[in-house]
Amino acid sequence: MPDPLTWARRDDHRYWLLLDALAFAPDAEKVAGPWRDLGRSDLTPELLQERLELYLEAALAG
Image (cartoon, rainbow, N blue to C red; front, side, top):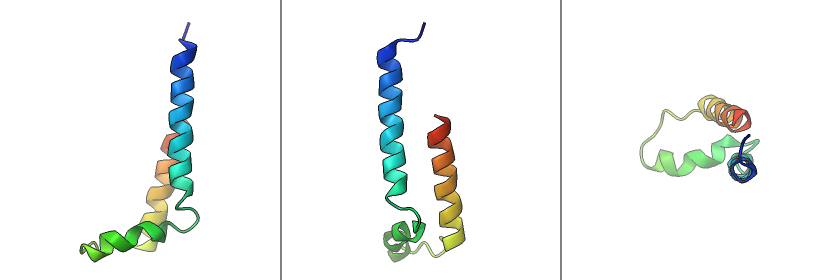
């Protein structure tokens, strides 16, 4: 039987992952500014949205 504390920690961690990701939704472009200042011109709006969606899928799959 799984340890209830382990499940609680996993759910707590998932909560923070989702909260972090949702801070950038629906405008994933917000995170690109500092990276672009450092020369990352490859971070297109489409790529950022795709990465955010993949991050959310992984967090929800937990």
